[in-house]
Image (cartoon, rainbow, N blue to C red; front, side):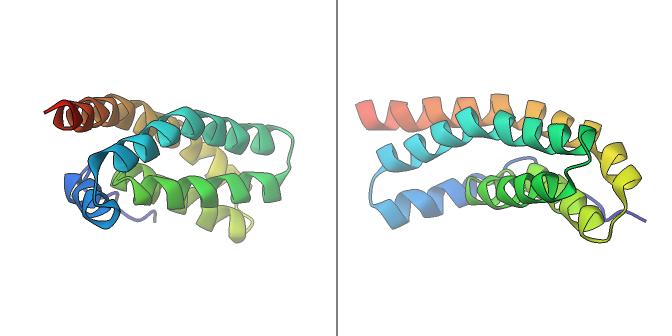
Length: 127
């Protein structure tokens, strides 16, 4: 049975901690922007690896996505990535393929939320 995904799609407290760590909102906003640019490519790498039976490539992409999503507070996307990474580690390719739609859905859902967060961070910069 697959582990439950967290209730929160996005945890703003993670971004707040990044702002505190950096001492400025600009680097946190840039980090989120980079995530927004690179995360679709990671999901594509997971899908392409599964399509070509390159399970190691899929696992690496899922691992990278898991970590980067957690860094920007995209909790559900991180958890969905962890699920795919886990099933690939145990060789359950069909399960990983079944999880792929959920991974894409989580990315689609968090993208708009993170884009709004970037706008919030930029608004704070202009103040």
